[in-house]
Image (cartoon, rainbow, N blue to C red):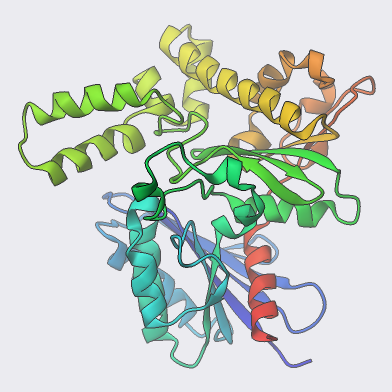
Length: 398
């Protein structure tokens, strides 16, 4: 089979991750990976590693905007050190109500997805910018969009439908979910023995959780936007709408422009809340753990709130699934924060969840449940880029 280098572009609210795979035959093989982090700051981070983990670049450039950040990615890909991409896969959180399938990117499709920026306001602007740049910079390579919401398309209407007036539902307001490519990659890695009743907790600066039955999503915590669901690093998660109205009225006291007020509210719920808002210190779990060790009560409260909301969602999903075979932790916190896993599971013994202290003392892939646990508890790193490559290869063959 001929060589098929596939470039993956995975943008976040302040980062661009990129990687390349050789997908010509068999399981795709990673060629390199890198990231530009800290977009919008004077001291960003830019790194590249080869397939063996050897660092090829490690810099701390000023990254005042996404254009400067993407120039670094473009320079790396065009440097001649790596094969020119034959196809490109892009991660998109949500394409809106009219774009539900992974597909070939065209200028018209980008325009359509951009209409629904409000459905993922921190992610969509940089994603559509990168798509437009990629179409221009790699004119000979087909570009494909891979949606987080694609995995969640199987949730039933009773889950997706919002209890709001029909006029807003007709505009596409519904539960779309996020982190779907991560969840899909966990199911992929569990094959051929995918548990019938599975809960996966993707815990990172953005945190969510999904109930999966027979490999298909049944329910997920994030809603119309990634702000819903669990408490995250800087996001509220689910909250009494009356709180939002109260905050909006307070904002309106100092501005008469409705758009400015809405944007200010968006900043509060998406960038100033969550672990950061409760602790008043940081959205980084590592910082909070250090502060807890020093006796900081606000850091303790923030982490306790994080743990409590996850326990509630797990309990609800067990009821929804009518039991549980396996609980999987993934994402930066899920993989690396030993204490978070222990604290979450400590209150779930009645559900058959019990972890082994020694087995849990690990970072990375492992089975951490006790022998007496009725539910298997595992830690599995996500493989989002691999899933995007697999979708690109499938779509190329259609």
